[in-house]
Image 1 (tube, helix red, strand yellow):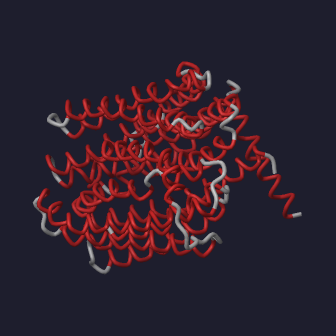
Image 2 (cartoon, helix red, strand yellow):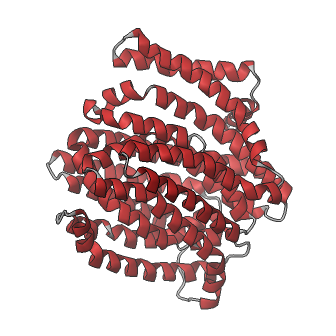
Length: 484
């Protein structure tokens, strides 16, 4: 199988895995949001802030190091596995001891048992991390499809059942733990690699020399991303935090599916071509053009349809999340430019540049947060959008020299998608002025937006449209040929 076919096939498997898992999770979150309400969701969000920060240390940058290293073998994988187990046990102990202090910080004693139980996910993640790196390195994304979907469906049944049996916040906790446990179990069954009973500190040091910079970068990124929620949870109400999170969840659902799929396939593929900058440049350009073509219309469509969609799906109780949702839509619309540029830098082995970029971006972001935290939650959300624009330029800066692909070139590659998405969004938004009920409004808006976007793509001969259509046709024809 040639490189293009391999990349496309693995992307589509990863994309189907993300869509399947996130689709089930999305439906479950709607059911639980209607059943449990903003206050319960806000409580779990408070705990999740600290969990996400701890989760960064589980990888320690080693997963990416295993993928990026050309000659990684069993000794490398086994050394990282045993290191991760020790690290995760230590991190769980920290969270167990810190639980009462976290509860005291928010003046909510009931958080102590929640923190201690949710933190068990750290142990589970330690069992899964190296298996995931092995799957990514060997481009075996079909396996992810079955493990992730199996875990998500199992967790969905448990979460919904417990919610309707009156377990409240513990329904959300159980859903998270069961999802991680089932996912890990299926991954261990389907992936044949097993850790060997040996360990090399010298190998670990070599991997860590690359990975520690990515670790620090990830810690900075996660702390920065969670800092807004930490401040909202402390300075404002649980309901405010829940509305902010819910506004993020809808656009994040769409972008995560597409972006994670591209991200997972792009790093190992680029790493294989790290000695050929022209090839990495071509991959980076293709990733930016194709992913923005897919993401832009979704983000624009969701932003203009937000109010009737939220009212219909999760009731009027969640309408305050609409302004947040729209801000996140416009922020996430440009995520492909971040992902493609950063993967190119990692694939070229420049984790030092990666760390420098993260420090620069976090300085900009921190200034924005400190400037708006005293104003309102909405002001903090707007600051996220403006820093996202600045961070695009920062992420693109090194690749002007490394690949000869400047931010201006990248923006021009995105411009056709931006223009037709804006035009489509304006037409779709105008439907709301007809004064129809929510169901009828959405029934008109969604197909109308799709027709306008495709029609404009064909009329103006947008290159990404042709590429996507040809790629899907090629994949389907290949599947038909195999069946015959």
